[in-house]
Amino acid sequence: MPRLEELAEVRCTKADGLAEAISGAEILLLWDFFSSAVEEVWEHADALKWIHVAAAGVDKLLFDGLAGSDVIVTNSRGIFDRPIAEFVLASILAMAKDIPGSLRRQQDARWEHRETERIDDARVLIVGTGSIGRETARLLRAVGMLVEGVGRTRRSGDPDFGTVHSSDRLVSVVHDSDYVVLIAPLTESTRGMVDADVLSAMKPTARLVNVGRGELVDDDALEVALRTNAIAGACLDVFSVEPLPATSPLWGLENAMISSHLSGDAVGWLHRLSALFAANLDRYVHGAELENVVDKKLGFVPSRRD
Image (cartoon, rainbow, N blue to C red; front, side):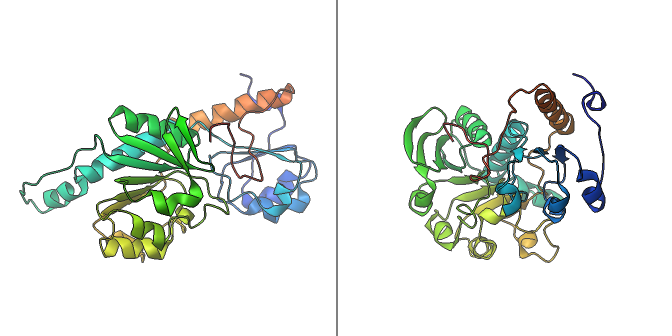
């Protein structure tokens, strides 16, 4: 693969220099996928044809001006599939085996025998049937868990999920799930989808795992559900406000496991992100079709099975 400098003139900038750097540029590699800088300098993007986002989610980028333009948007779909799937499995095991409880007892030098749970035959509902959701489904099935999905449309006979329920039926299908895993992209139809009604429909022994976007969940309703033990616990890697403020009550809840938006960032991820962009740049230069093209109306890369 040629060096980027051999294929194009390369400009590097932070957000405060983007207005100048984007003028005359055909391609933008957006590393900070939470940045609003592109919208702020949109009037200067006079030659832009393609934006590549170094993430799977593009919800922070798709402002109206870009969505209505001819500029192609691609994402980093595929890079994070296995790491996030492994993180979900680790989270489920940590909650089932009460690893946080063991660590608390270790800190207190307290020997206390107790029973833990098995995960084989536990029911998992994966909300989001894209490539990350599929890899997660395959991994959880491999350890004996019973997996179903939630996607845009209802269908049966799916090779990874078996049954896929439509997302507008979420409140009526969570009742028998032991784990609800959120991997859906953030769109207008998924924002706040796990609300008080969905949480109250879950079993009191059920747990929630969110590795999608924090805004998929009603924060206040989740705090109440955890504080009152309406659900047994949650593993939260993403939040509506990041970093999660030190004043958030979630930090102090023993039935909440909190991590810093790192589920997909396994060792080597930066190299894999760079290689993906370089390969797509080579396609662009040679007039080939780009990979991971986002449907800007849907807000994600569609596939026939999503």
